[in-house]
Length: 506
Image (cartoon, rainbow, N blue to C red; front, side, top):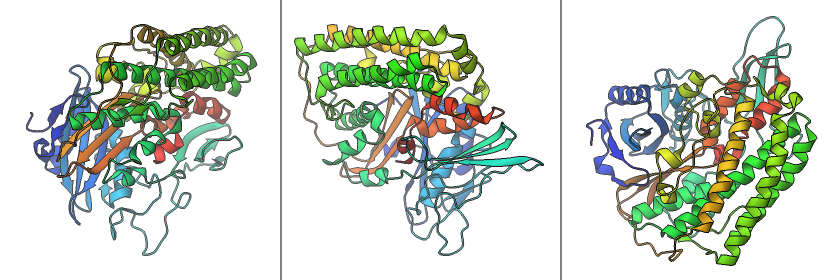
């Protein structure tokens, strides 16, 4: 263990006593040094220690050694902001300020992200007047001054059947100078409800953190629980989880490719992919009875096994659906009108992607060669790998094309694993959880890195539970993609990211 951080692998518990608690300046220096060396910030969060003290935990990942580094610091009501030196911390610090009433002084744009009262009574980081309410739409917005500069406000209620979010554009004519994204309308307080668990309701909360990422979040949770209990799921159960995770990826990537075609008026692909997404969802239902995979992943393994007949049915469905997807999606790359809309639209430069700590397919579309399945393998991905899919242009085309690469590889992976499923049971009983410990569980969901952190108390119950959905990391990427773009490009840029509102708001 370094004097400045504690090292662990994905899903390896560490004792709280072994996590170094650094002085404020040393904490900032350690975080900045790690990010400069190529580590990525997976999470930064707070936990109340006393009425006056909040402990900040940072978790970073070093891909070359598959090592997670954990370190902490204690702060009172304010501390020097980490964001100027570590831009990837900017959204995390806004969350900490809102949750714990701790002000990061010097933060470049400090405002709430979910608009709820502080968890600590009497503490507030916003310098409000006594009794002043806080709600979406009442805080200041970033403004660009100048002759003929105007604002365009979109949402939170939208014309389509989508979740609520407010988008405010600063424009000169059709050109977007800046997009400010305001969320929080879907806040449900899930992390707070998890404290004191796990209990019978916990897995239900995990499956609905982001409804289109049921397998990703429930797998991250179950891996954390199993690590704390010191009892891993069987290889057969791990393989079935991996199959379900890739089916989830197939369904969502296929749907997104069709939705991108909708936004540019390309009917052949849009008409097919909406149906084909449903075919992949129906294939998930063959495994467990739920199109979204609910009820499948459980602590200790999975709730449903597959016999030979069902395995062959899933393989047949995946093969047939993939062939249809290939025919529909390949039309995109060979249609000049499509490529004219995708190519060079909504570009996020690689340097900006790295600085802001973007994850998942949005980062891989900028040339970032990072994937939890390979870099921090857990579960069945310790034994079976998928090639990492990347592109280098950072635009709408790149985000669409990375999806297509992943569809091809995930379809092949599902069929291969079902043909050679390990023998054995599919669920094991778990004992009590390791007390006074912290475990980090990373999963590569279809949007990107999912991070769950569980901290247990002296009785082995959850003293704190932290969830970072990939959307939390990537909404700022969408804002950067719109800079200097015509405002009419917003729909296709937005769909090329397809981020979750409820996964962000929790």
